[in-house]
Image 1 (cartoon, helix red, strand yellow):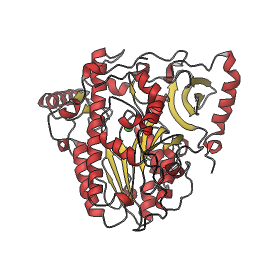
Image 2: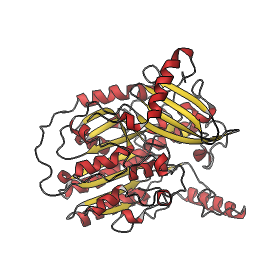
Image 3: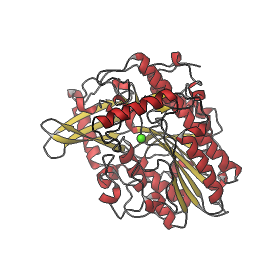
Length: 503
Ligand SMILES: [Ca+2]
């Protein structure tokens, strides 16, 4: 096992991807006709909080054989961006094909049926075109499912969070304390949180994601004779990092490196960073200040273990697809709903506009495309997944979509593409109130403009990925960059409509 520093991983992600690509057959002769046997099925796989820390993204430590195998038959998008780096806003945007300023879903409580009630979601669109659509576990954010998206009622796993007697007892005690303190533990915000990680020695399907794989396998068998769109969500590597022990055993903790930039970016405004309250709520985590190095290493270990566990569950589902002879007539897309800080900038979790939060994995394998096993460095956005699946499956595009199909990249991954990708994140600050950070990634730069919602306010961050791929220094305020900031600000304000791919 080799060690991997975050800097080396980030810095070499492109080069590593290219080297990885060079070792594969790029080729494949163009195939003529679309699937003759009928309509293309869709296996739509969502992975909660998975950042692009996988073998097929050039990470030498990650054990992700099944996603790497999928990558060898599809296209790995090395620069895919979510539209807002937190579960529900990101998923809502992806599943409606609209950006957060259109969905007006910026938090974990608002359902898009209350803001854009008539929208036709991605699975609903497939349902309306004769597909059997079914959702398993976390496709929409927990508690915010959308019944009209599915042909049959949404299914979710029943397994509990913790599996060792100690952690189950701890959870029971914490919940009793919470009740005694008058908290309503049915409300997720008031609920006690237990250990941040666990390595139970149990079978894969003792945990929720193993149950989900079991159910998805059954669903494939049931649906194999009709066109289907199966949405399958996996919960790990979302906190807490609970994975069967054998996945932890794939890694040697002492050989895992900590982030080498555990500090705020120079000159960054304080509100650009998050206080990673999500992790702090877990038992034993610091309420303020940094985690210890020992905790950091355990968290990184747990993240890798959970990603490998989910990789194995995805492998089981795809194996069944193969066994049923459906692979040649099914498009598979796997995406993580946003990135994750694993100690970079001293942060954990997501909830920022930094590259570590908005850059997420996206792999699509579609039969009969011309570039299986390729990587594409094109800038793509999660809002593009909706129209891409429509194009690959031959469905018309509904009105109102705010992305572009990247299906042409499945044939020609290096063709000229979008000029920029856009993300955003809201904050609240003293004296100004609500602000929105609008962030744009171009080939070279990340520009973030913070704007007041109700009061005039602007502030800028600019990171040069050519010289500073870890975004350690905000150079927006340097006099020599004034013209550059002005040019990029104009591009940001022109928005996604001005950044669309040449066709
Ligand atoms: Ca998530």
